[in-house]
Length: 134
Image (tube, rainbow, N blue to C red; front, top):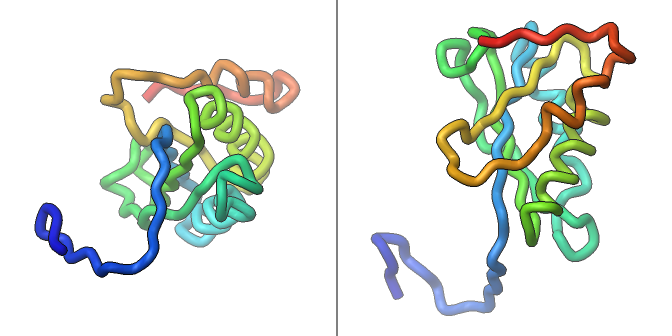
């Protein structure tokens, strides 16, 4: 079978309606951006056990990121908006912002439906953090 130009082999598969989010992680070097992305997407293989499915979408050249540094885009999926928002906050706060030189940006700035992330993390650095508007 073929759908939209994609061959579908007749084997077992399952799919769920899910919410998606995309984050762009940048750092001083591609190595640090990848370290943060790997940490963020770890233990995210199934929404059934992990509450989220996540993966690295691709590496980004400096001219494709908001702050002009090399980066990585990451995708997260959950069953509902609340779930994807909670997992984004948890994973950005505990795995991305704890990695040296990293910054994290909205990877879907044109999306109509939004989740709250930055406002929840604004006190991440015990009020010693800095915020920049690009």
